[in-house]
Amino acid sequence: MTEAVAPEADLEALFNAQTGQATWGELERAFARGVLIRVDPGLDLVAVACCVARDEASTLQGWMSTGQVAPVSAEEAQAWSGTGTQFWAVVAAPFVLAQAIPAATDSL
Image (cartoon, rainbow, N blue to C red; front, side, top):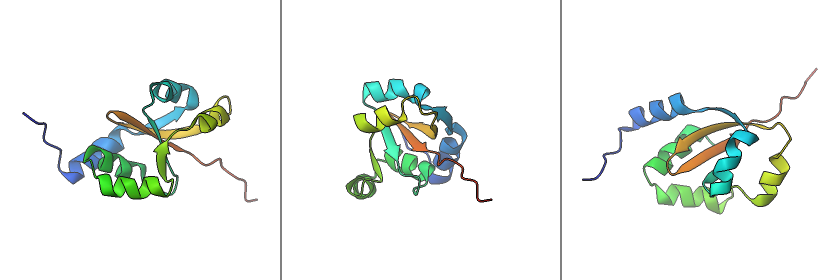
């Protein structure tokens, strides 16, 4: 028996509820397991999670071809280690999707 995928609104609500802030230290284990995926800040993290859950390969391939969605590289991991970078993160099994939160800049 295969598991049915939830309707779009339910899936979005589920991922919204499961999205939270994380530090690199909290994401490091997912990186070590090879399941940490970087999502460009210009994309909607929940929308990407929905695409992963629905196995929307063509949409994901488009984002991957432009570098907007990609496995976290060793260089990125090293750059984030110890910097205090905060992320929005959500599990879209078997992956953990992470999106760096841009540092606040003072405009005054």
